[in-house]
Image (cartoon, rainbow, N blue to C red; front, side, top):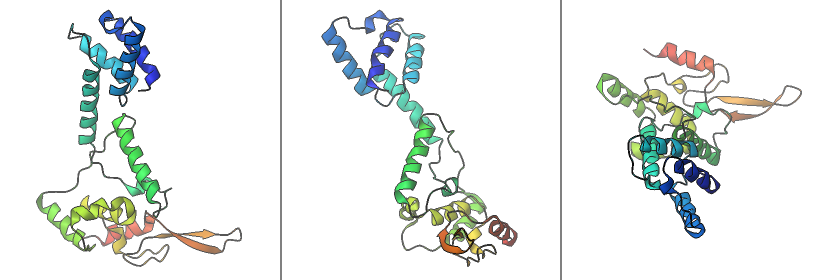
Length: 224
């Protein structure tokens, strides 16, 4: 919430509870500064709804801490229902080497979930049962020189490998296990997009974070 929205919020709450408003100008200024600090992360509409919910069940004056606590509970609930896994394939516009871009996209996605602009993703990884053992065995084919939990912390910096691991954990085929007949990428290598000049000649190649559809089809056909 912006500081300039605090006087409006207090005025709205005062319609239900005049005790909230400070009449003395010095006290009112101090009140606005205090409320602005406590409610800095709380959206205005939520704060107003929280006040309405409070006075629907209580005759006590509402405290800004109560509003902030209600908002923290909502944020905690949304993030608990969000698996927090950033899906590189959802951002094909990002260069795989653009670390800052991926970190910004990750933060943007989580902020969208927190503020309700994006529904929490409840896709769960396979963690138990026969499928989990199979997924773990397939993950070993990726190889790693660091513990699994440490490796996952680096996912934002290695979107291709992160996407490959996510597919395996979700029980989907590992597209990089087969060659790509579209761009001729060998097994284990990411697909590449060619850049061409106005005459149609290839000038360079860019590593893709997603695979070509024909390669995914081939991987699905090769999966027992």
